[in-house]
Structures are given as C-alpha cells and as structure tokens.
Length: 73
Image 1 (cartoon, rainbow, N blue to C red):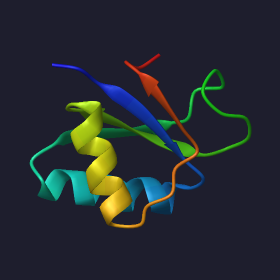
Image 2 (cartoon, one colour):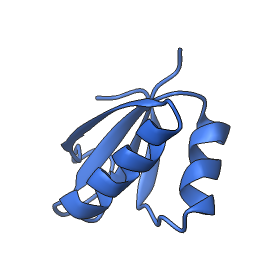
Image 3 (cartoon, rainbow, N blue to C red):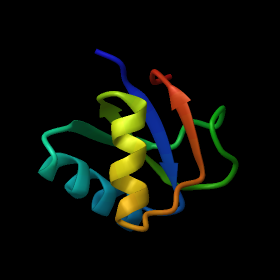
Image 4 (cartoon, rainbow, N blue to C red):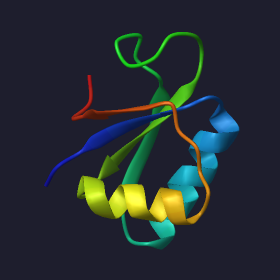
C-alpha cells in the first residue's frame, strides 16, 4: 500500500485531516513536518492510501495543505 505525507500549517489542521481520512477508513499518523517537505513549523499526516482518493477527500472537505510527498521520511 502506498503512503503519502501531507503537510499542514498547524496541528489543528493535521488533526482535522486525520479525523476526516479516518472516517473514510484511511489509516493515518500525525508527525512533525519534515524539513525536506516544507519550511517553518507545522504538522503532517501520513496517509496509508492511494493519492487520488486521499486528495479527493481533503479537497471535497475544503482542507488546504502545504505540500505532499510520496512515502514518509
């Protein structure tokens, strides 16, 4: 199964995204955003699912994210 790291500007946004994805049956994990993914502080969600499905769920709910990276570092 693929995994994607999705960077958010705060822990609040990351937690909301994790709840949304979890409600759709996607396993998630919240981590501090790796410096290789985005500058500044923030939190990321590792989503263990297909990128298209994950992006659609986030976009349909109006969630804005900073960056996406395949896998997790």
